[in-house]
Image 1: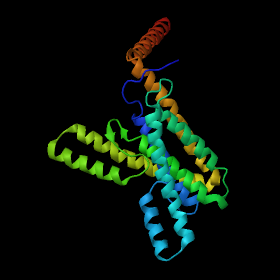
Image 2: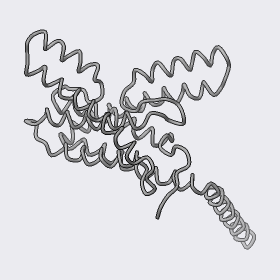
Image 3: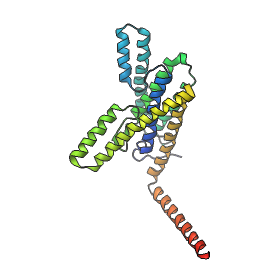
Length: 254
């Protein structure tokens, strides 16, 4: 069945929370399980690459350079997918990105530690796809794979709220801080998962991304049929009234 898209269905709070969780988890995974390389924080990788380059340690320089190049490649591909499939009627182009992420991360779990360089490159590639494709949560410009921009955004909005009293700014600030906390939660649980599951821990991210993929179908259906949610609410309301009436009859008989 073909679908029509009305607005952004990919910036809901639940989708944003799932993506932020997986973003923190992926960083913890590559750092703890794949040789202390960051999947998302390319600034850290650039610093470490520069340090090792200064020491003429070519092996370590390449170790940090490869994820950076993979991240750039992921950004490039995300834009290509956007331009190629933005008019798609069957799947939203961001759902295609999620499908690609899931496949890539699922495959990473099978790579042995001897191939950590490739594993880190693939995870960085996946993170780049995500950060370029999902840029907002409820219309608020937020990243789901890094925190520094979110910290700036959250604090800017909080200061603006204090200056103006605009509660919308307060709400957006809380959303940004919540995104950071969920990212941290993903990193925390990533530590326990890596301890318990080893290299297979990355599959937890696949589950989170799959949930986000499926949730986007729900948002699409509601966007295409704005009366659907109200209809469901009315149905639930009527069923509750029927239950209440049945309980009253039962009490009356007693």
